[in-house]
Image (cartoon, helix red, strand yellow):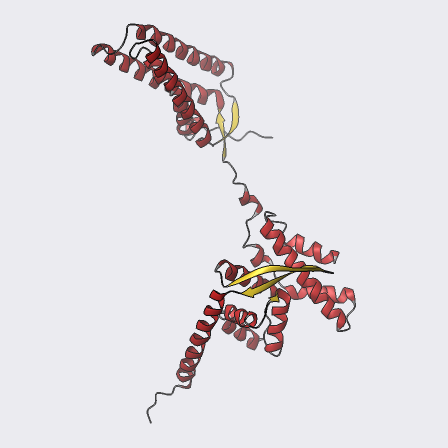
Length: 116
Length: 220
């Protein structure tokens, strides 16, 4: 319970990057993105659909992704998301920021001052 | 499928059904149907899968709150109960008074500098007469029912714009009459009188907010 809450808080700020990362490989629809997050996290993190829809709306307004409707199927039309060139750029930037932040946080948490 | 639609439509029932909202609902329904299909493929019964899919969706209220609430979609015009005949008398008396003062003052000023034609006196009297009749009628209505209460919309912008347009038209007509009759300013009082309607709108806006004209809300 506690683990899940901590994970959620830590991950919340990176949802956009996670979505952009998944869309950088291919276009996906909402439920597919949530499912992929669950698989990649080994079931440790669940991206709720409402959170995904909110993030997708915001990112679409920012021009990071675009959406389009797929073919009509049994359950109706599926809405697909695709990454835009601006989104690809944002993804690269966020990834670099994250890697730099991770190194810094690792050092800070370890309390390593570099002094004997 | 119907249960999913019912759930999603219900969650969005409090927001304006814009194309954007309808698309969001369609997306959620399609995703939930895909989730149910996955769960059924895993061996769950359709009812169980439906319950699990809807349950896993979690709280939709934050997402729904991002859309325009139904009551905010059409801004409500504020309404106030007023002592109707008392307010109307006040509005008419003040507007006619201000209009008459401007008319008399400007005509007198024009006469002093010989700008106003003699016919202006007749026009002035005629428009003052109409103004007097206007005040008299408002007074009679007040006398007939001094405690009349009406709930009125506090919307003045549209009325004021309309009145200003009428004023502009009246002023143009009066100027045209001056030009065609080769006279100067005998239509001046008409020019001023045309602005009185716009003045009444401003007066009503001002007076209807004063405590002496605000009435208790009438019971249905």
